Length: 420
View 1 (tube, rainbow, N blue to C red):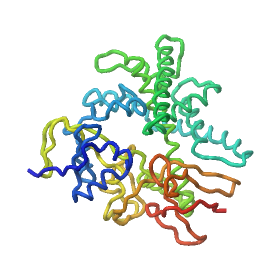
View 2 (tube, rainbow, N blue to C red; view 1 turned 120 degrees about the vertical axis):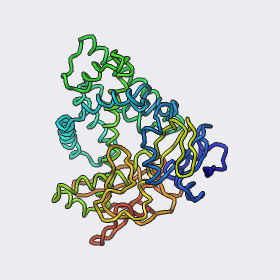
View 3 (cartoon, rainbow, N blue to C red; view 1 turned 180 degrees about the horizontal axis):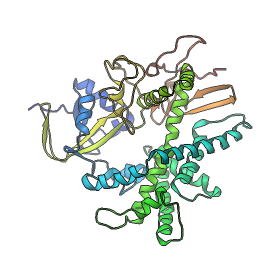
View 4 (tube, helix red, strand yellow; view 1 turned 45 degrees about the horizontal axis):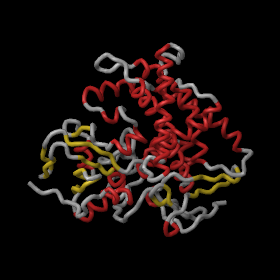
């Protein structure tokens, strides 16, 4: 039996916070293997990367979710306590069926229509503005749309406050200091808000549409035949509202990609099948979550390594999605690609092997000075490299008419400039 390589540091929590997207892949390169052992928050953790590790990680007979994610700070901000992310086996499948019942094509189509309607209404206001910052402008659009879709009442005077709470749960969850405290406070306030609404529905004082997510979750019964506690039901509702508002991250990524690759705009207009390819490639290149966690269910051996029961395991999402040697022709599904969310991503361009340390581009702003003119910018960090929440924003400079480079080969910036 081979011994899993061990990182030299006593605890790697601070190192993970310093380089969340490259932490696993950098150390795997250092050890010359696809896995190594370290301690995260003083807990023994096996970190893995690559297609083979991905197939292993998603085996439910070998790994469980319960107890994998530390209660603090992730459950206190991003996920909430009592949500589906901490369930396993029958409880997980039963709760998952409830969520899947809300994901019918006609239901998702209605959400898309609501987003389009609110987007059009907001866009009319943009015409009178000198400058539009895309990322924050998306938040109230998505908040209004998802609350209407879910059956959650939202008065106009509440929109700003509830939007800020939903955004804080994902945008500030991984921060330290005051922003992290604000994320925790926003989570508690949002849960109290939705908990009160759930209690009104159960008491008959509020009647959302029968097929709405609010009605379904408020009436949902677990395997023991009892209703969910009101606070847990609120967490379930927020696990629909929060991720929908968080799509603003990927919309901004898509805008950034289209700014770098204007040739994609015509393809999106001409070819319906190209839309899914483009979206999935954006999700692969601009990864949202750097890694995911699980725990070993029972002792087992894999590839000559021993995995003890109860050990925490971290799978490198970003490194796995961006470190392929050969993915074949454009449009093929990468055999080992793993999603930030949802089904496996599809790539548009077969990338070269990349070994340089890198962080992904993260949400920034798209400034529209005129309807036909714009520029993309991100907050600057150390050494003049544009950064936002821990990663440099890749930006490609390209002369008009020059051949476009694929999405995965954008260049780092030296300074911002208008494309006008």
